[in-house]
Length: 368
Image (tube, rainbow, N blue to C red; front, side):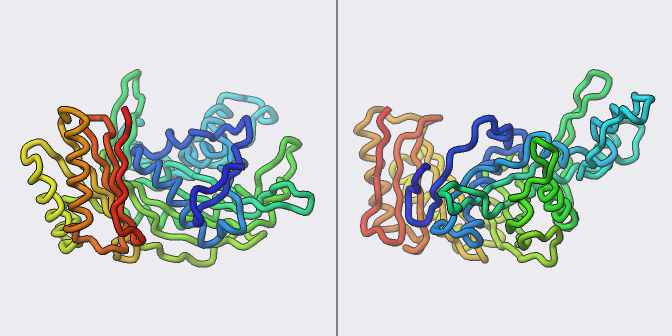
């Protein structure tokens, strides 16, 4: 058992040995920030359904890499279906599990066919929520699922021994509706999972399943995408009745979305940037990453990058200056947590944080 680091977090069980999906998410979303947000964001949302005081977290133990791939394949283009075409004896053909992604479109070759029918689904993430049974053993009592969807279809297609890159911006409204239409199929597959003796896994039949939909950002984005819908599937159910809207947005400062929709917070960021650059006008880069829930700023990260500090005392002096700006001049409201990361090149140098309960900013200088 891994204890929680705070009162609002989960205690965690170690993953079982032999789990084939540990780290498998790296083959899903194209952006590292999306991978991180998908995992941490699903855990945060799950707290509203499987409270940390009642449940213990364990990374997904039931969906295998084969199960996940089976959903990510294109419909009618699954490897087993293609293999079966080469087998003349029907009795020797293996069952085919339909892929969920759209089948190939029209075109004179695989590259055109792929472009004309983009893939929408890039990953299915499972998280398990456990409770102790009467004998003291932890058993699954609930499951959370995230369907990760593409805002940009990025792929490399092998055609005649050459790789052809594809990058197609997608209609997000269309992708969102498609995701909702496929979610029940994912639930049905989970309920139908078999054990080593090819029997239905009994503990998956009568647990609630919390299903969320996540829209990834562009592959080169500095901020992640957002969860946009969720639903709770009752114990034993295989269907979805209605969706609840999740209003989240990650915003980069400065950026066009910040200028268009969050002018007031952009002005606060610009004031902070001006104050910081007074110290070293020509050598500092400052960016901000705001997280909004229901159109309200709920958390902001500020990143300060310096070319190179001359010595440790210069770093200490600058970090203390940043802390004084946070205490005396930072315009973001006190109830909004602020995390400031100071780096030089690729090296993390210092951290300054402020939360609603702090009278003084927290300062930590990393020892190299």
